[in-house]
Length: 330
Image (cartoon, rainbow, N blue to C red; front, side, top):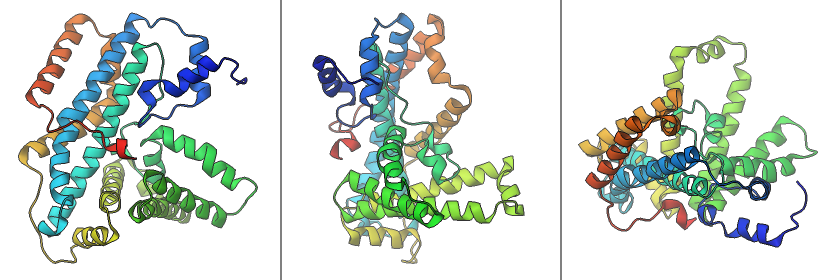
């Protein structure tokens, strides 16, 4: 792209409010080119923006804030809830909170941009359905993943060859991603954990090529197992991400793997479990049929009931306490 000649265009890119705080990460060439060819958004684009904003509000208020109650209850004092069942339910609640909180914020940001005639890139693509660590980072916070790949990993790896160098660079880059979230040793461990997952998967994948294990892993019936394993691995990372100290993180890890020899209580309420299954169902349905994306194309007799249901859900599940987004702190 040519150099920006109009300082007003660049100032608009810097100050454009939907992407200022938490993302999605949009690059200058993606945004400024839209300024140069800006057109008033069509009615279908406005409808799509409204649907995205409503989707984000539902994710935040109906889902994320409910899971936040459980995760805050556990992580405010993990020693008050000993046992592996309490630890796994607390980590699961935090993982679901972060996803719906950040995904909801992203939908609201993308919807606001659409109303103003701009298009923001997709930032989440049903990470619930990730089958392996590389697939996870192609679905979770996609704009950050692509930015890190282009501006950190590729320059860092340029001119260096060999698998050992590749694996080392992957580990170092993921540690830097952890530090991006905050200057805390728990974030360093979180990044190192995901770096080791990426390296470990590559080593395993390379070692099993052409073997019976490789053929089994490619079968359709193996998909639920791989998705469930990846889901559990990501939930486990909450033990590094959520605690404020290494001591607390170590306690949670010990509880997760049953070192306390205590079962403990299951912290998720019946209503939260129902929300969990609803969210998983919607994730799979969106993956297969893109029903949310197609809603803007439907006639009024379909859209109006959908809007009514959305507003009814927002009314039945009011915000719990002040509305704050998790990623605002990073």
